[in-house]
Length: 555
Image (tube, rainbow, N blue to C red; front, side):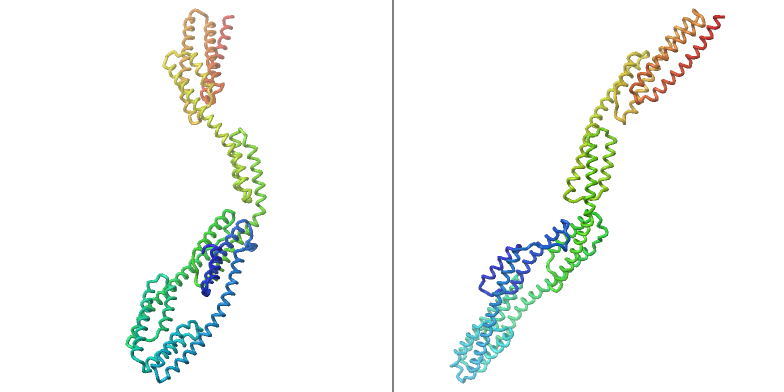
């Protein structure tokens, strides 16, 4: 019986049966009903506490099935009371009848004509056997008296041998069949049922008349041996059950100790309590699967377990009640963080905003929990705002990453072209200047590539500019040499001044190309600037000499 409906249906069947309702059957039905009922009540109580209620405030809901069950029990009690009254009355009447038969048997035994009363005595035996139930306290003495009178009748009276031998034979056949039935009971898997059947066979064996004296001991020993096997199996069954019940008790003691040993001072958060609640509920489920403990201990161990569980859920309810005040405050703090995150989600200041949102996320973790009905919604609101920003940031970064790789390929191509120009002893200055200009207009490249790439660019560019400047100086030097002997000293200084000035102009043009957009050309620019400064110093010295030369010419 696994449901209340099945239990109630069984009670209705018991009410309809013709035979008396056994107390053991009724007790079994009651145990089954309240096992189911208590399990449902315990589950409802746990749900109440899980929802934030205090265990002591829990009130079970009215149960119509329990009301119906109690009504049926009361009706059955009335039926059993009436049955017992009728049964007691019947047993008392049967006792009177059997005592009356004993009186008649003793009268027949005293009769001198045994052959004449044989049939009457047999009739009295049949009548005595037909009468069944008598008071339990009189059953043994009645049976002993009956056996004594029967044996006295057969052994002391001078009966006709034919009658006596016939009775002995029939009784031996009956008792042999009883022995065979008793021996078969040893194979019955239902040990309790077999033992009950054995009691019926004992009653039948007692009620059967005597056998010939030479068979009496053997037939009794055979029946006793068969009875011993069944009785030992019955005894072993209860010893095994007792051992199992003791094992069940030991398991339940361990469960009680686990719950009683909970370290409540370590349960400081909602998650701590939730984890520990899951453990307690698991222990409760395990408890239900364990069978009964010994009868004298079963109620006590259950009370101990229930007290430990009640203590746990009461402390949990107290914790929730204490923390309830902070839940609203935590909710307001988290709402404020949501508002800040939502205000920043459309920002394109990627670095600053990312740092701010990371800080808000850290603050969120430091804030305590909120009520369960708001927990998921407020968390979802905060996460959506943060996720939206970082998704947009990732999209932009992905786009920049693609553009930087394109720029990387463009600059590598410029380096390749510069290297091609460098193969010539007299590179095209205009082409070099165009490539430098293109380089400076190209945007960022991947960070990890920028230094390596610029070193390659600077190396080839330095060589090219040196070649271009060398070409320029060589050209100017030729002009100076051809005019060294054709002009005055003053004219020579003026021409040299113009060459220096043109060289400075070239470097300044190159510097102009580099300084427009190149962030990586710092060292290169500084070197060119130093060359310009050096040429300007030389130019100033030439200017001084030209001035001195003019004064000399005037003299």
